[in-house]
Image 1 (cartoon, helix red, strand yellow):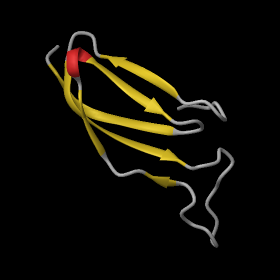
Image 2 (cartoon, rainbow, N blue to C red):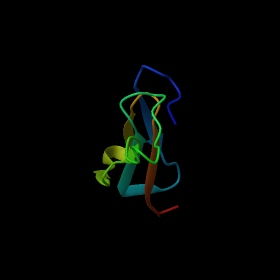
Image 3 (cartoon, rainbow, N blue to C red):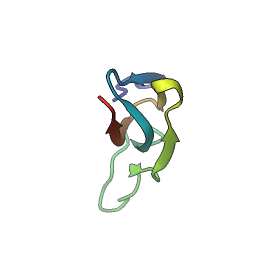
Length: 79
């Protein structure tokens, strides 16, 4: 989650004692941080398409737009 109203951030995700080879990233965001869906405009805030990412070197870097929520999902390997 990036609660900042105007600035994007990057998050580094490192798995210790395991690894991820590929993950799926989905973002929930809108152009304006106070945007919301209504019956008249039901798709102002939407989910992005699934983005598949590889995890080079064991660390995944994910960009989070201002005021966005990001889901990262992948299978843990090793241990």
